[in-house]
Image 1: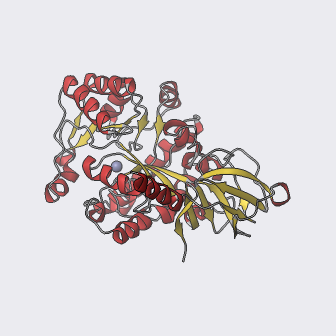
Image 2: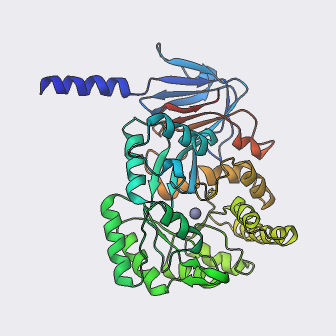
Image 3: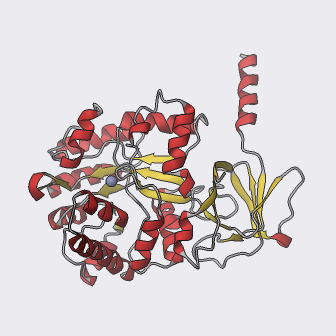
Length: 407
Ligand SMILES: [Zn+2]
């Protein structure tokens, strides 16, 4: 027993993140604060120990100092709409470490994501991947997950994929089933619930969820302090989501009419957040071979919904639907958000404090402040001058450890 205890201690020491200081960069501690030039970010035991201008922070001896003069540092990014669903992540229990490291870097960490919310996947596999990351075996972001999604009928665009990979996600058709499924998933450690309040079927048909089913799932989820995401699809699914009490719309809904100030006020009243996923509509439109002018109109319509929501003071969460789409680069999403009227600070809010405010905790605050998790992104260029700089990441630090460094 004593030997084991010693081993555990040795392992714990080796696994602990070294103290380090990132110096010389321009620091954005949070979206509202004035940036700090020539800053020091001192990281101790995976948390922020101190921040300030170089002449305000005295570093103790033995701290590893990394020079980031000319770079820009923000809090770690959250991607609030991802899927642990790419083929190379589907067998997380048995896939070699190097392969998982490479995939997680390509999809998440090289884009600055220190936390991702998986909003539908194979729950067994996602929990296995999360386990390997949390054990320190694999290098990746913190994964929050809804596990299996709820739908009354499987969306047509995932039927073949699920079948090909032997994944079964049975439909949920009654309020009683919904309550039971929420309880069962909660027992497995999920962090939220995802409802396809609308599910695309053949020839433009949509299988919408009955509002009573939405209410039952939402009530049980909220009783367990789990947020509820909705994939709305059209007006009816959007109504079922809002009436049913969901917390987050996982997409804009270009199949629903323009969002009026009254509708946006109603969303705000119900504290419903929105994940724009604007790149998705371009990708889907091209996949469906929409004529360019129709595609353009469709994207403009999605942009107008985000613009209306943003102007109405709505709570926007950054998310890309990566894992469903295989475009990992986030630059296009930032460009589209700029076209919808978001400036750098609004984007940083959607990447950090807004999701942390909903899904975070006392440590994961989306802010760089003493006591918070040392989740950081180092950018090559100034995101105030060009928002696509948010996609040019030099390094990603999670809990005081580098999970990505540009080579
Ligand atoms: Zn999705």
